[in-house]
Image 1 (cartoon, rainbow over the protein chains, first blue to last red):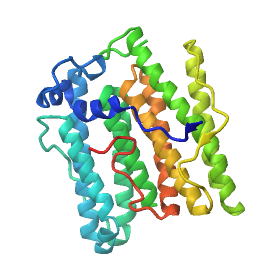
Image 2 (cartoon, rainbow over the protein chains, first blue to last red):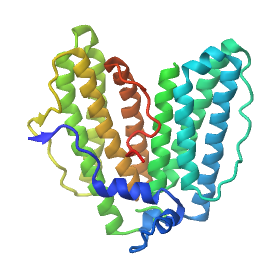
Image 3 (cartoon, rainbow over the protein chains, first blue to last red):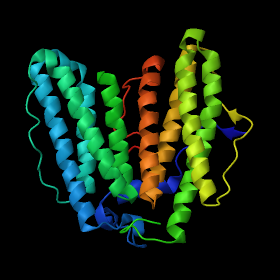
Length: 161
Length: 157
């Protein structure tokens, strides 16, 4: 009888951790140069640019959490764990896009404290859609990372509802 | 046809098909597992489990269709699966549902990692998103914290 849920195959976790970087640069940094990155890990200039753009999208979202919290301190406490997760996602994106420099656009500010939650929720949904769209244009570990972040933000959207 | 920039060929598609086969196996397990989840819930709460089971059936059928179009023989569902823990209460049921959704999420992230075709990535990101959204609800019911994940389906770094 098979177990109900099997863990992801071992080679996937290793490769994801090591290859979640454009053009296998992380593989080189980790000293794993015995085999070249496969086709899925090759990145076109367009894909690299798009990945950098997603770093900016995530930076904007992190700023939105800060802005929403400033507008509604009670909300800030309630969503502290979500904000931390958004920051974790940003770090993983930055690691996957070496050389990324801050390029976010300001999210603005919530129109009022009472509107902070729906405003933040809209920001989360926008970022999730952007990452999902970018995900299908990427491949390999970059697609996996963007898809995972998008799904994580959809989960946040549900919690903010 | 494999995407431009990601390479073409049988090797690319074979890796994608292998990943889809694993996702299919996870979906089979989820469909079966939700029967256990539903049985342990109060009647008034079974609708959520029924809806989740239907969602997994839909995804499973999409994968079956895709693999059939490629003349790939899909793995059949097993008659029964080993439960990771006894399911004796609604909280146990929610915890099992979390296991099911997290398992399918990991499988779909792997598909994203291995996919050669854009259409497959579209299917994968949709399935992954559905799994995480449902998992948030089940984690809440199961009393887990946090109820959301930063990177669903990816192994911890």
